[in-house]
Image (cartoon, rainbow, N blue to C red; front, side, top):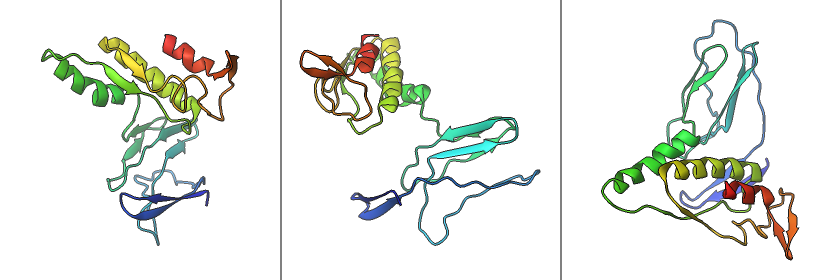
Length: 180
């Protein structure tokens, strides 16, 4: 077991494992199901299939108390699931506000950022998608915060190659991303 967490909203403990399981699926198999036996739930974060022509992978963001995503494999690509990518961000976080904007209301992203414990590579990819969507929508934004656990200075992230800058630790990659 890698970590034990309390999910206070449901008053339960969650055991987090970082394990990889492999299985050979016989040719002609039409359906594969994964079931948690002896437990009340299981969440997966990644599903990969190698059909001999290279591996196809889907990253998952499982949510509590929701039906699992269903996928199908077409021989080279896993199809289905809830892909949370730039287009998903646009549909869920941009388009609803564009509808409000069409009613004559001004829109600006008041604050955004990612906490220092989110992996840096993930933060940069997410920020790139969000910034591109906001630019396309013609919206401004405010970063929360400039210096500190969400910022480009002195964030305290352990996975950043910092650069010294006027007595501070600068996250140059994040700064360059924000500068566009």
